[in-house]
Image (cartoon, rainbow, N blue to C red):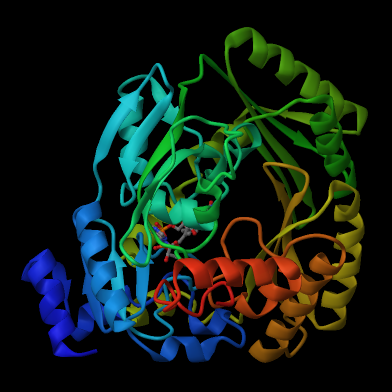
Length: 461
Ligand SMILES: Cc1cc2nc3c(=O)[nH]c(=O)nc-3n(C[C@H](O)[C@H](O)[C@H](O)COP(=O)(O)OP(=O)(O)OC[C@H]3O[C@@H](n4cnc5c(N)ncnc54)[C@H](O)[C@@H]3O)c2cc1C
């Protein structure tokens, strides 16, 4: 990168908001994905960012993008770098655009039930500000203490409350984004529209390839009047799954839906929240549905304990890895024999068949599933996989097995990932899933960002 560009960036943002020290370039290059889990995308990690720019306003973002566009320099939007797919890896070098100075909560409107925030606001800070007014956000991932609003919109994350409130994309009422040429686009803060296509959706789950989100208006909810926690045990995963599907067919939408099979145990964690009478009625009916499918009440305690602990992994990440150099982040996986955590989406009617077929693939390859789960809705199915201790499974062969299992989901009418995005890890499989849709994405990209400066190399672009 020419010194003149770094000089111009410093003129716009101030020298203190430009980082060029190798230590900083290293820690801003990438996210929570390590090369050992990237299965075939290891080459993407060879480059570091050339410079880190820290804008403080939409106008700053606009100025940086105009400079980058003139010189054809890549720009990688960076929320907090907590993604797990490598979407912030600067695969072609360039400017990593750290949005964390843009952390203002602009307005909270309890009548409109919305909050307008800058993109770099950390979810926990929004949650705390809302709590003081008797409100809460609808998106509640493990990563509340560390992830930003802009990053969670750009990956369309899923959290513990998604059963009732949906993924992060559903929380977005409106947003403001700066396009590659510096134009600033905004959508109106009304939940639905019939006046033309909904352009906010272009940015939801798009990993920064169409522009930089600078502000978002997010739905907020009243703190619940009542909460009912229920844990149930099932003899088989299929019974628990069928109970969940029946619940959804009836129109019951628990806040938390987590059916987990770990070892011998199968536990269904449910949480009902909202106004008192509604919570009591839906909680009672949901437990009756579970009983029809063989569910046995374990009482509230297991789910209360699970709920209290739900952010622990992110608290640990905050201390041990957040903002640290890559060698420190990557060392978290050293000593493990390899694992992967897959989050697939399938039509309800296909999930159990998919489980059988993917089990067959994995057992042939010496790979074992240590946890199966559905999270938030019956369509969203996850598996934590490790090499079987008795089998000699190389990392390469684990990667091949993962690929077979992901493409099986696609071939059965599903998707390969429901909450973490594509990044560098799943890039090569996206066109296969999108079909002609990928040509449309290419055409939109060409129209909005002809110099391909926005997070190049991601989403297959
Ligand atoms: C311990 C831990 C637990 C996790 N738990 C969950 C979970 O429960 N559910 C879940 O869904 N995910 C979870 N994640 C993953 C992670 O928190 C999410 O992917 C998160 O949504 C990304 O937020 P971020 O602010 O760190 O974004 P980053 O990782 O910095 O960026 C993610 C993507 O968004 C783009 N981007 C960031 N900001 C902007 C912007 N303002 N405009 C345009 N593009 C932008 C980046 O370029 C990149 O492509 C977890 C991660 C960790 C480490």
